[in-house]
Length: 477
Image (cartoon, rainbow, N blue to C red; front, top):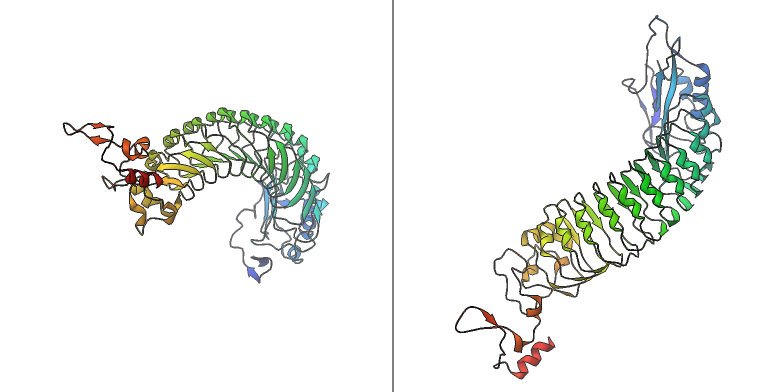
């Protein structure tokens, strides 16, 4: 078998590597009547022209005259057709920096039309300098295409051609990390076989078309890192098989569509870094499979709803920088699968529920820069396990009755002042070790409880022995 040349790194040294096995290509087979299986000459010519328009090495055509059989070529996959006599057909072309080098003038050749059986076309990190646009007619004519991935091509620009919607068999459309722009065409909703749509890291603008609800077989929708705007359409709620929705880092406004709550297979919902406001619709309580809910840096400006505690499979909940108000709901303590809770940079008030420290899977808790107050009482084992991943800084009202933070093993992210009536831990198991009622702790000295001489119960009698000076000093603390 002859040697062939390819690049492990497009800008690094070239190596000559011997192919050890035919791997993913069909090779050296004969038909049932003993004839050698060949490749249609028109397809072979088309393959040469397509790869010639992409690749830097011009010698590959001479070294691999039979790319589906005796001289297989990396990145090309063939299948045997069912015609008589049987013939090889090119079904997959993969170009990437892992083993092939694109030339600086790489482009998409119209000769793709000579490959009518092509099912997969994936080109990674190829169009780097010379401008390339998507033809209005070329891709739409590839009727057998099932997987189209043009990823990490900074010179790939222009608009998304509406003709893409004509590829009725397309299951995967990944065009991320390019420089595509313009609006997402409405007829994309007609791609009834589409399972994955990834247009992330481009410059798409305008609104999500309402027709997107027609993608009934879609499981992944990623439109993150674009310049999309307007409201998220309620038609997203029609994507009954969807498992991942990532709309982060756009300019979406308005509130979350209540119809999202109908997506009972949804695992990830990321709406972070937009302009979405509250309230958070209660219909989201229907997201039974949701594991990741991320909405950082949106002007939601509302309280955390109690129904969050019903999302029992939730692993990560992140609402940092959302203007959240009100207390931390006790229902958070029901999330036994929660591993990360980030509610920093909000305006949350009240105390930190002690039960948060009992969540068995929680290993990251960020409540910094809020308006939380009262006695911080979390299990010592929980505090030591999280270390620096527990952050309560920037809550001036928080205090503790246990100077545990002085331990070297405790993160500075946990430093809080001693509460005014601190008496140290009672059982050594919690940060506060049990704490007095908040109203009791803040009473002036003349109303603090004293023990009656006749029994063990407490009464709020006037402490006549408390001098004016002591009272004054206490109130000034």
